[in-house]
Image (cartoon, rainbow, N blue to C red):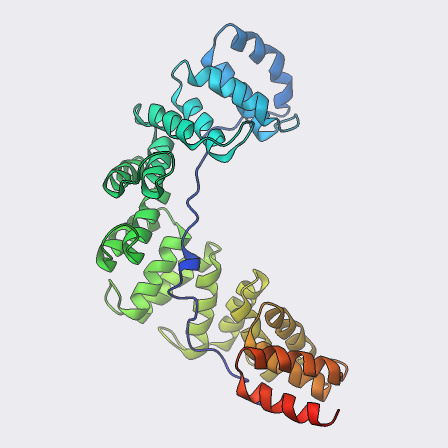
Length: 353
């Protein structure tokens, strides 16, 4: 059988699909009581008298569904009451709701207005969110320089996602001249707060000597940090490093561990690789049935090698009941992606029909 090997190429390494989601954080406060809904009568009394903090707390209860059903309309009503009195965290939340159409029609201009009101009070989350709006040109004319200034301010006030976004901007050259060394500096700042995506990028840059000195040991270290913090691509890359002995001693048990973690999180390449390891008994007991299970998951996500191997399994009846029609199906899928071996098998099988 062909193609029973560990993938050595990090196909996901430099991909736009790994860019961090630019999370607009709505709130920095939650009510931690056994039954928040019990507070509503007293909060409403204070809120109706103009107490901005009570208005904000009511908004939080309705937005988060704390002891009541989520009600974005009521949340926005009370947040706006507090925001119009100048409460920065309420202004930030009102902006978030206009931005995402929660309890109202989406309105990026109003979102910008309220983020700006809160940012003018040096409110950290609003500084971050306003920076993203300038970066993407949402509700305001795109201005990368202004975006960077706001993101730096937000990062300096403890919003480490701002540093991550700055790193990504310089890593990919998004609105700025690509500069991997500058990107590494920003990722390092974010990684100090254990940001797993920043740790992943530092691992990637260490592995390839791109913006950082090429250092496989450092790459292994950063990938391990990111993987332990739940970052799937780092789990996959760490599995590769253990499988190939890059930056560490070869260790199939550790490779299988990290491939399994990434596979369980839905990474198709990891699903294929752990399937291979069950196929050959590398780092895990040899188990054709489990190999088939993982090949199936990867094949269904479009992994051409998994499709090929799964077709072979159906053809030979190893780990699964022999089924020529299913073999033809998966050979066809792999052949459609340009796999010449799958096409050769397919041509032979179709001759017999």
